[in-house]
Structure formats: structure tokens, C-alpha cells
Length: 131
Image (cartoon, rainbow, N blue to C red; front, top):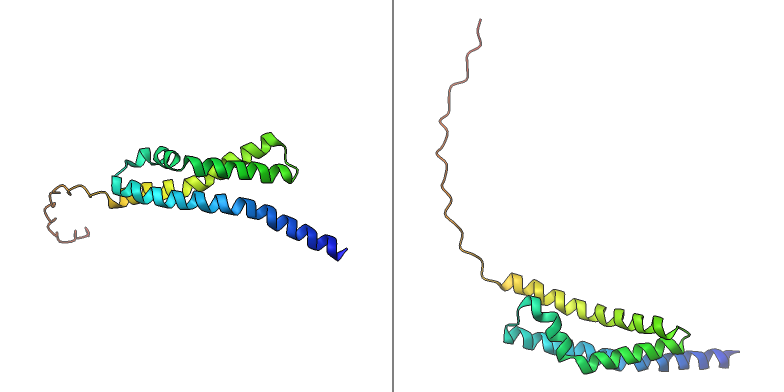
């Protein structure tokens, strides 16, 4: 009984390891591509496509690994492929959002327009109540 439990744990750990390497490679590629996009001054609206193009190989490897892992764990192939797409989208969303945020923060602020200062209102004496 204990041997069966140990064998199951080892098998699950080995299966999980098949996802770890492609995940690490994809995340590393996204970091490097984001840094390069910053130096290349890629427009915020174009960053997602830039990252997808730069990390195509790693993205494909991760999708394959996720599909393989999910199907070995009993998930249907179509559902596994959809899960792989969602996994890639999740990993891609963080650097895209960060890049867009940093682009707006680092954008040069527009020159403030001169606002006319209103003339101070003269203080008036309080009205006397009628008697």
C-alpha cells in the first residue's frame, strides 16, 4: 500500500516536471522580450503581438507540454488544448499589462495649461436682521 502511494507520488512529480521546463523557458523568454521591447520602444498596443512573435517556439512547447500533461491525467484532448491556450494567455497577460502600465507611467506628462485664478470675493458684512 505504501509502495503504491510512493510510486504514485513519484509518477505525479515526474509528470509535473514535464511542464516545469517549458513554463520556465516561456516565462524567461517573455521577460527578455519585454526588456527588448522596452529598448526598441514598441508601442503599448503592439506589445502582445511582439511577445507572441518573439516567443513562438517556447509558447508552442508549453502548449504541447500542457496538452500532454492534461491528457495523461484523463482530460479530453479538446479540453486539454483549450486549457493549454488559457494557460498561455495567463502567462502572456502579466507582461503585457505591466508593459502597458509602465508605458503610461513613463509617458511624458502634457504641459499643464495656465488656469486663470479667480478674483477673490470681497467679504461682506453680515446682513442685519430686521426688527
